[in-house]
Length: 598
Image (cartoon, rainbow, N blue to C red):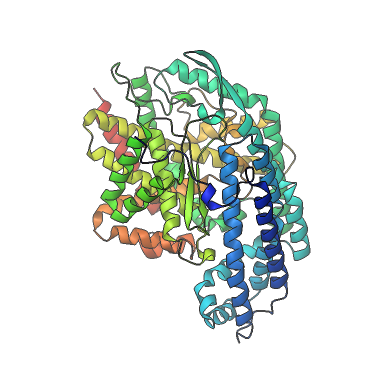
């Protein structure tokens, strides 16, 4: 009987395959390039924005046309990324990524021109201008946000040159890392002897500590073999950004703050509270070490399952995982489950465990189709089920915005990660309700392992990246120095609670090499803690699912802080919010200690 939830995605319905239909794909790119060039030419000739609204018709007409071009550009970008992620060694897909990257300066030129046009327009003048046209009023946040982002732009001629150079500079280093990591092979021991696997297939989450340890060090050896290349990529990505920031007079945090639509006060409140309260997880890590029979956990023990009295935990099939997710989502809100069922049955998910795939997981939007696609590798366990729920949370978020103007479908990463981790909370809560004490301890272990990632691992990444940017200003960092900074960051964030650290985590974690957005770390902690606080409120009234949907719908058309305040009622710049969320973690630790104690 055929599976009701396909484990491989449908891409053919979304556009031409750069490998199987290369000529048609080339025609698509040529058409997209021509339209981007036309948009760049048009925007450069638009009249100045003024309160009298005389230029409103021309601006409205341009933005309507550019909305269509933007949707096609984003969909093409997502589609090529999907093909390349699913077949990392495919030369045709690598070539398509490069050709698409060559269009980026055109898209940046249009965005830059829009931002330059509003940079010096007084707020009252801009508001009057936008209110005079129905479409401009609808997409007003595009231009008000552009005013904020304009501060990240160089003068027009320099900006244009910088974007053109970035194709073979900044973004080329990111593509090189993707290619190297996607092709990297890890030699591991299996029941049938030595075998080579993709890095995404090698985990240290199984019940046998010797296997976890072997896999960890086997992966580390593989990363060491490309360590210098990874160090070159990281040095030049950070160096390119620092050169730009120096010209702008900014430090290295200004860009991620503006792109996440938050102020520095909010980031300081978040990290300050986490630093003050991270020790709530130390008793959990100590108890888990006791249960595993070791003095202290090693890095590769963090996701190890609890002992099961000699009874191996049954494998979780993909079909069963899908069913459990749908049941859990339905408990929270029927439309959440209805959407997830549609996505799972319609071939939107790539979850097959096979060689040749890139590591990690993602959800990407396809605005022309009004769909998304999810990429992951399902490995028959609860962690994979949580990952699938996480990505479906992203997909639901995008689905709620699919009928908005394309300019208002783009939400910041910190709010994106709120939606995904909220979905994980919904799944975990449903599992807890159905569990006996023994199973509850297992589920809580998974939840607290996630908390360790968000409150220790991700802050360690932030500490590391912050240190890299500070030192990189004085010159390139050797691979050995990157490892030293990584271990120092891990020890500080984990309160010295582990025994074996992961010095080459900087090479293995692809988030450091995403060139579109620096500091791909603190938004996860922001989203996780906000989702904890929000889900803790979910039982406070039947209106919460509606308020939650309103929050997600506001995410594309407001600052993060305003969306949070006006829909969920929280002050993101206050340590009270973040402390309240960490208190939820503390209660879970207490319950875990009770369940696993003598």
